[in-house]
Each structure stands twice: as C-alpha cells, then as structure tokens.
Length: 135
Image 1 (cartoon, rainbow, N blue to C red):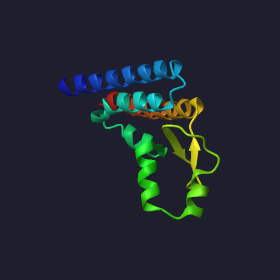
Image 2 (image 1 turned 90 degrees about the vertical axis):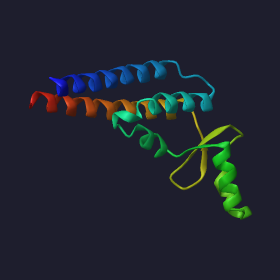
Image 3 (image 1 turned 90 degrees about the horizontal axis):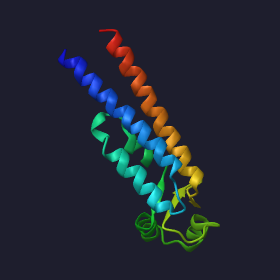
Image 4 (image 1 turned 45 degrees about the horizontal axis):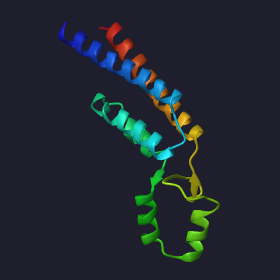
C-alpha cells in the first residue's frame, strides 16, 4: 500500500506541474527573460521528481546576458563575434542557434519549450500508470 501511495503522490505532482506549465503558456508575456525564469523556476521546483526537466531546458541553449558576456571573454576574435551576434537586437536573453550564433528569443520559443516539457511529463505519467497497473 505504501508504494501505491508514493506512486499516486508522484503522479499527482506531475499532473499539477503539467497544468501549471499549460497555464504559464497561456500567460506568456513580452518580457522574454521573465518568461524563461518562470519556466525554469517552476520546473526546478519539481526536479526531485526525476523528470530531468532542467536538463531539457538547458538543452535549448538559452543565454542570459551573463552567459553572453562569458562567451565574449572566451572568444575575443572580432570576426567570430560579428557572426556570433549576427542580426540580433539588444535583449536580456537569447538563444544559441544551430550554427553557434545568437538569435533573439520570441514567445514561440517558450511555447515550444513548454510543449516539450509537457510531452516529457506526459511520457512519465504514462510510464508510471503502466508501472502501477502491472503491480
């Protein structure tokens, strides 16, 4: 009975997180750094659930001003920096594109991220349900 309650609690937490992410998706605003922080903080609070959501967020290569400054210090070559910055406009958060250059972030990037996070959670929920039925 104890294992079943633990599974139920874990499953419930994942369902709550999924709902909170979907609500967050509906409330995204034009402050891209704030959107990022809200998503990150929400997922960080559930990291103990073994979802690896933070890893999924980090795989998206979002870069705050601090990370951009670190990159510039490590790569001072002017020609490389021109490509790195490309056609970006000044902002407080960017995304590294597939070519290793900065790209500005838009609401769609966060909608896609939330969709990926929800998909990961749904996979975990399905797996847990199958596990609990096989007991």
